[in-house]
Image (tube, rainbow, N blue to C red; front, side, top):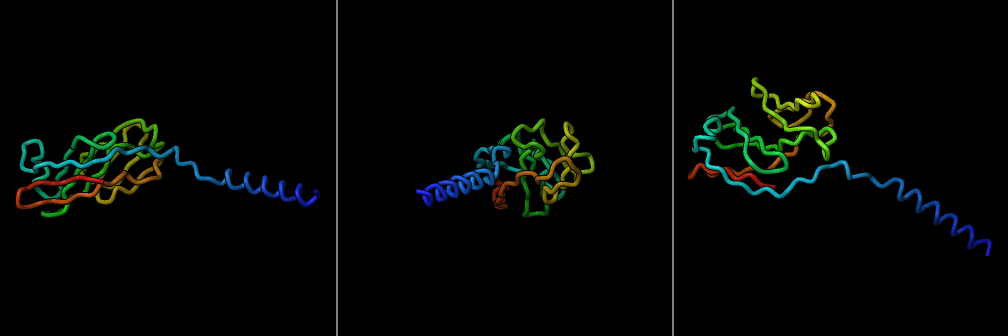
Length: 144
C-alpha cells in the first residue's frame, strides 16, 4: 500500500510539471487562409509595376502589404501588428522611406525586405505569405 501512495504522488507531481510546462499558444493570432490573385497592370497596383514598389491588397487578417523586389520576385506580409499579436492594436503601414513598415499604435517597426523587427515592443516578425508571379499574364498569386 505504501508503494502505491508513492507511485500516486510521483504520478501527480509529474502531471503537474507536464501541464505547467505547456507553452501558451493563445497569444498568437489566427491568420485566415489566403489565396489571392492580382493583376499588377491594373491601375490600383501601378506601384507594383516597378522594383521597389509596394501596394496594399485585401485579404489576410488585416490586409496584405505586397512589395516588388525585382522584375520577377515579390514578398507579401499581413498588416497585423505582431506586438500582442492576437489583440493587435492596429494595421501596419509602409513608411514614406519605402523600406520601413510601422505600427503607429505601438511604435513597432519592421524591415520591408524580410519582415523582421527593427524596433520594439514587437518581438515577432510580420506574418509572411508565399508569392508566385506569372510574367506571361502579369498575375501575382499570394497564398499560405
